[in-house]
Image (cartoon, rainbow, N blue to C red; front, side, top):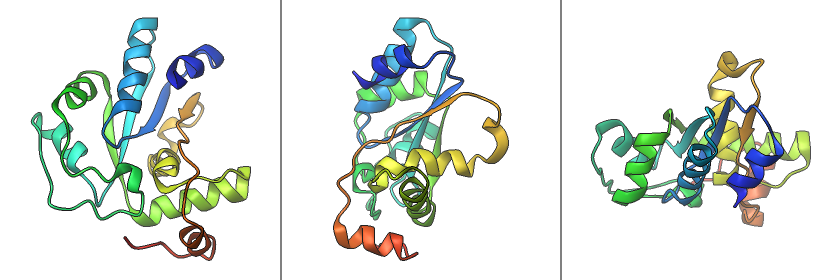
Length: 166
């Protein structure tokens, strides 16, 4: 339902960045966007150290990986599922990979700049937008900030300037 709420609340979104675990969130965004007849680009985000969904998107087939070593556990997919990958391949503009350090920096930025607590997967969308640099400058962009259940120890490490290791 968050996709419908977002599109109803914010008009003329050029793009929405969404973290991808098994794909339910981004598939909801794509489906609602299409049902509403919107032109919004949907951009998926995965951890570089858990690239199964990105590889599947790029190669057009399911690609399993042996590891998903990310502290952003909501994106720690090793074995993607066919149905979400099909929807993502048809409806996402692209899938961006972000590093553990970029995720940690986005968590710090959310907390410092907006006082929002974000877990790794939740901060991944901001990390991808930052990584994209100025390509979205001047455009109305949505970021999916999902989850605030980061462990206290991990959050303390991130605020201290380090990046947790899985």
